[in-house]
Length: 385
Image 1 (cartoon, rainbow, N blue to C red):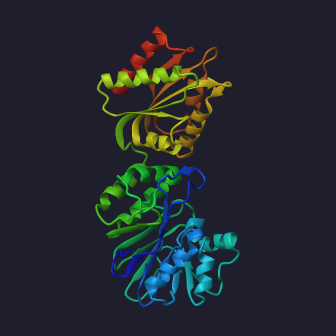
Image 2: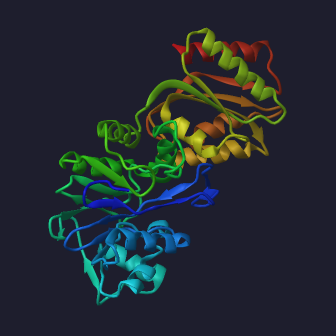
């Protein structure tokens, strides 16, 4: 696929994968993007997952008409981007490999060599001249590994952004939009590192970017302010959408009944956006992304073995791990003889920044009664206000 006159996409689509990084469901598959710059010196940017070795090498040959590339830039050492380094360097014995010092250290750990006679070590601000094109390297540590280095082509105004601005899904699968799977990807994989993303966005603001080439998902060529704006929102932990998301677990259905009544009460009081997730049955990564998306979050669960129900515990650990903050949170607990869920939830979020708990905590003893239903109505008033 042609991106500019000299830059081509040579990535692949994976329709066999079920779990990305062994945890994220990807029903629409996954794209592993690699790029080639055709110039006096031919440059390949990143490799693809090892299972696609033959297809990827064939695409390089097709784009170069059999001419050997001169450089391989490795921006990030995760195997979905680096696992064909050995294949490439064996096929093209005159090619040199360009990467940061940390990348070469990881290269030895993964593949047993850093190609000492063929390596070019670069740091932030360094440039690689390929003829007509000039490539500048931009450090992006912890977006989302410490060695990450973006590459910027100042001639075609293209930023090769590795995992930043990526999304789940193969590129040849029709998509209703970019944001949902990009949000789930960002929050799940990069979300902990908002401070570092903010730092990189400040660097990007000083660069004239007309095209973003990520390592997963489509090449972005239009309305870049939209994508960059969402990254700014996500990485600063601001709510993206005014709305209420209710995340719940229910053993026998009584907590679910309370959640359904709360949803109805909120809508009656004019709440325009109310989303409900059953944590035992929904995609956990989507539920976590929803908590970062919406401005208000309700957590409803049972006391379980003197703790909280396992799916809620997993969910809360996912929030805390990703620096969940700056939200209004309501709590509904249920317990038959010793309700403890509300205290445990608040304790798990105790170190999260700028969490405001609603004045009302709903406490249910086994099933809703007149008193706990009255608490639900007060909670609905607080959240809808």
